[in-house]
Amino acid sequence: LNPSPANRRALFTQARMDLEDNDYKIDLWLLDGDVVRPLTASGDVRGAVWQGEDKILFEARRSDKEKKQAEAGLDDTNYYRLDLGGGEAQPAFTLPFPVSQIAWLGGTRWLVTGQNDLDHPERYDQTQDEREAAAKEEKENAGYVVVDEIPFRLNGSGVTNRKRGRLFIFDETSGGLTPLTGGTCDINGFYVHEDRTRALVWANERGSRMGL
Image (cartoon, rainbow, N blue to C red; front, side, top):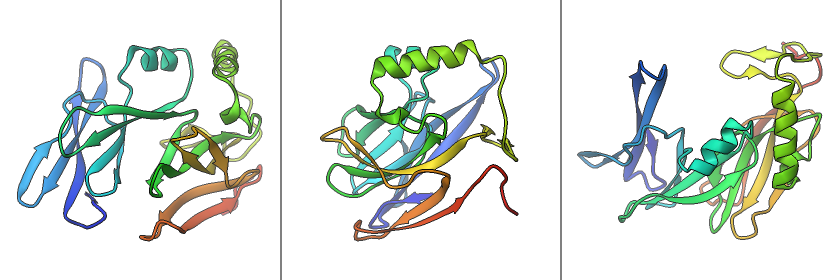
């Protein structure tokens, strides 16, 4: 369960196996007092966080454009916002990397851990055309992977060679991403204080050989 900031209600997900697509259909549900109700029915939810007490931000890939970009090799993370007061979920924003954690900082700011490629550390700041060209090149070379780290693969994460978790502040209004960490610092997670002005972050310096 993912409780709201005031602990008045909670979110949870329900996963259903889809044998035809060899996949899981995941939807978002709300526990509000003694009432449980579904918030989505599309089966495409991949994570949700609270934005205050009455709004929810969740990850999904819904539009034709988002699906085509994914097929082209772009690893964007697309977010939708749902107001519990009523109405359909609306597109919120897209981040140009896989996101492992996101939390609201108040207003239009978010704290985000995104995947950083040490060989292309500024890719998050590239134009759409530049990122599409890079994705096309990587897709053409997808038949092999050069590895120079131990471990180069982690269970549940696939190939992690030269990949690190990087901490950012994202501002919806400007669309700007401000990196807070870099280099070989690997962010494992964070906890945002209830006043939303500070956070506890856990991380490690990860060189070419991970320590025990």
